[in-house]
Amino acid sequence: MASQTSTNAYSVFIPEIWSQKLNNMLTKECVMLQCVNRNWEGEIKNQGDKVKIIQPADVTISTLGTDTLEYKELTPTSTDLVIDQKKFFAFKINDVAQVQSNTDIMEAHLRNAKKAIEEVQDAYLLSLHSSVPSANTVGTESSAISLDKTTIYSKFVDLALRLKNSDAVSAGVRPWVVINPTIESYLLQSSEFISAHNVADKTLREGAIGRIAGMDVLVSTNLTAVSNKYYVLAGTNEAITFASQLAKIESLRDQSSFSDLVRGLYLYGAKVVQPNALAKMVVTAPSAS
Image 1 (spheres, rainbow, N blue to C red):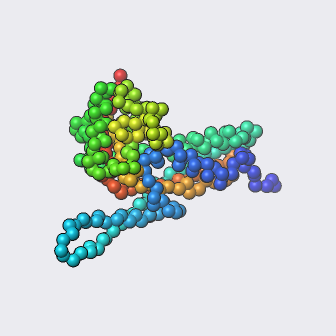
Image 2 (cartoon, rainbow, N blue to C red):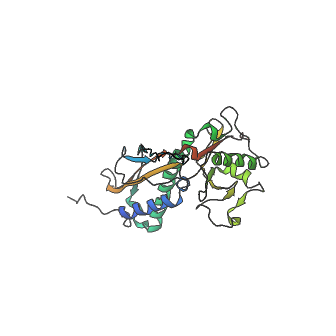
Image 3 (tube, rainbow, N blue to C red):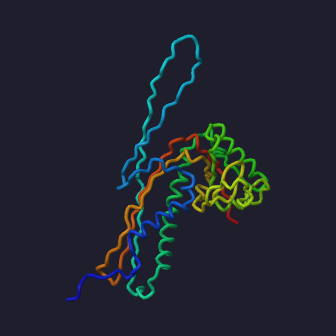
């Protein structure tokens, strides 16, 4: 009887290397990961893991008089960041591909896996617009903003002002705003938009196309229309904390075909820890022509 053991059809497939490369891709290239902090990531092993976040208490300033100094006890608050998002990819590699096995095709598989993860992850993080306070919102559900090349700058100035008025922006804190390609097309026609190659201080986030109203501008195709509206999200990296882990990539032999099976498990979660450090604009989606 022939042995049931078989070498992997893709001889270059080494799970540990795949895992490391994919993690690097996700960390460096995902749009929304430029806009969050990962201060509380810790070690994630399973879906449902919790990361405890300790928030410092406010400090009260008093006027010094003749009375004795009074010391007030500070009571920090805590909240949990729950790793409640569990995503996987799984595909089959036929042995016929063995003769064509090379590093390039494996890299292509990695990029496709990265793109698929990024789409659901970006959509998840962008959905946190629901945590934006009403005072930090430009437009409303019933009266969404209509953008064009002549009005876009004033609306983005208003969006940036909401962040400043909520004390989210201070020295050394750079706000960001995420738009989609449709809004980008308007922005590129605005004379007030500063494109990336014209930003003199070279402090733009990786992947930013430029700056407007003091905010780094990033573009995501995952900012899609919901009920004929876009929710443009702006903020600082202090607003959302994020944790993720590519928990496992492995391969095994398919018992019902001449193929190898490859699968990966990705866990993540996010928490809005400073809602006032977020702002949004409710924008009318253009009608299809």
